[in-house]
Image (cartoon, rainbow, N blue to C red; front, side):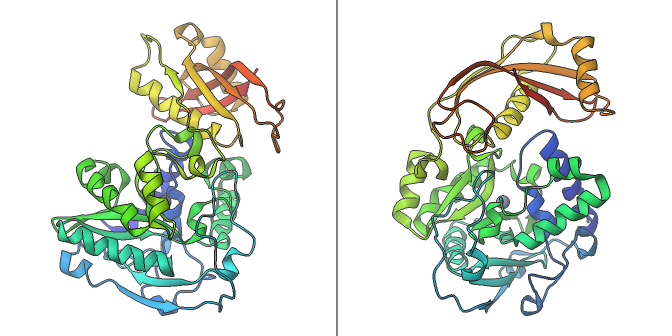
Length: 384
Ligand SMILES: [Zn+2]
């Protein structure tokens, strides 16, 4: 039986690497897991860390899983309701008065973690869970709300331990995670009585996820991080991350069209993107796909830009000269491989904080990526 503490540390490290390397996940959420098992005692201001995670990792049975408890806590009497359609992503921060208005409940999941969720989202989740159980599908909540203060603490810890550059690269910026809303829920699966919580394990059950996804909209939820939409959402595919909208009609519209919340709200274009991975003799198509996902996730930070195409620039750029240049830029990174990509995109009419020209087509825009022998791709530089 795997040690829960060890597992979470591994998850934590995997999340760190994932952000720099193989995928863009919202996994830093998991660093917010609390060791508090009594929901009433849990406080937002409590210091939460991996290290204090419980060491008991025994797999729970289904019936035990069903014993999750919830207790309502009105943190502050809300005079006004939150906006359930609020967009929070890498370019849209949590609305300022959000945390004052937010009403949450705490529950304890099957592995004993305290999970805080927005009140209505939790009720809807319970209805979804009940529906799924009729089809013998069992889920639980891995994490949901994480306060801005929690995220700031994670950022501060990382800055102290690894330096500012590394922290900025690996930890989601405080205020810019959808988990702050309390409306974003990370599910995990319980299969044959065993908790399946790790991303790489959960992804092995596409049939189960598609059955879950088919029921989301009926309960006011949408799937938030879709496949191939990294350039819009800034995150890779996450079948477990769902978002509550408090409106089944809207949820149904979004889910049936297979679009993102950004696309629905009109802050990003859902137009098709052309991807050309070429015919490399050095890299496999999957390796190049991983690099493209990194580029797309980063592209999502360029607010309002519309991505047109990404092309692998060819094996000609894979040489010592370019590799040395990457190692000079990221001093001491120890890269052993390099790859160049070209991108076409269009900038918005009002490019807020961009250093790009407004309303202009950019073509053959360069993206340079590099990786170490055992690491994922890093974006080293981009631009002309
Ligand atoms: Zn999530």
